[in-house]
Amino acid sequence: MANWRLRIRAGYYAYGGEDLWPKCRDHQLAAITYEQIEDTDLSGYSVLKYPDGWSGIHGSRAKSSMAAFAWKVRGGDTLFVADTDARIVGRGFVKGGADRPAYRFDVNSPIVTAKGVRWKHTIPVDWDNGFEPIVHRPVREPQVTLIELTDEEIQSFEIAAQRANHATAELPEDRVRVALQLSEAYPRYTPAALRMIERKHAELSNSFTSWLAKTHGLIAETEHSQIDSQFTAEGKTFMVEFKIAYQGHTKRAVREALGQIFEYNHYPPRMAHSAWLLVLDIPPTPSDLKFLEQLRKNFGVPLNIGWQAGDGFQFHPNKDPIASQPHG
Image (cartoon, rainbow, N blue to C red; front, side):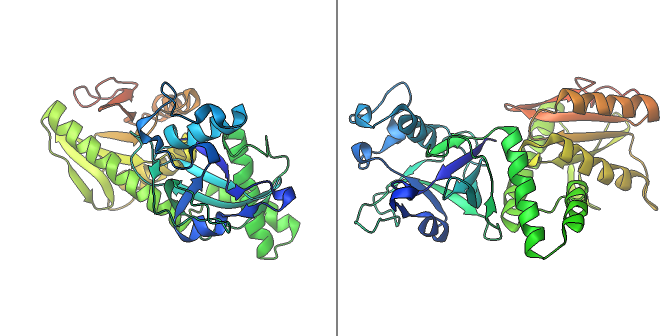
């Protein structure tokens, strides 16, 4: 999943350009356009095949923004909306599948400027209505319409958003610092984020269940006693905890999953399973793997971590933990 910063304005802010963010928010859409291709459906084109009029778009940054909007943004991506050089006013999650561009050309798009120009290049977005605008300086390349954000920028946006929420609650600065520390330990998800996570969690669970049946001929029991999935193989009981790495944060996903895994195996009157599988939607980082290896070595936990890879799943440290007993 990628993270993007988007500007939805007809012209420059400094010159009174019309802000179309409210219309996009109300219609659950993101939209941009350039005069030279405003009536051209880009779904049949790509970076290898540009449409007529493409060369007329002024500037390489404008071309790269339109190309990313039409051919790179996918379902599950996050969009942040900037309305000035220093304000982030919106956040949303792109609808659709991650296997294809989310772009749609809509001749009846509801996003129309005051001058009657219809913005037909659209992307469906689940906008977070609870997002509080934040002031963020500096904003990299503020005049670029669409730009992919770095992990550092995403983290700084999240901290700024949390600080804005706490300031709205009129917390003093010392309490804001404490609240920021707690929000890192106990992350709060917005309703829009939870809807996206729930959808991807279901997709991950279904993919694993299908893979398990096809690869090992096993049928898993899902959503029983709060456990995402469990099954028996070669006399061993397996439990599976699925976790979506929200905005790519695998460390947070691992942390949350471990608390649940230990509870489901050891909190009375629970009975421990023979093997534990933590399955992510994206690959873990080397630091994640090192951390889990230390848990296995120091505490003997029967834990393997897996992640979705194409049509299948990869695991660490055992390549096939289902066919072989995990070692401590």
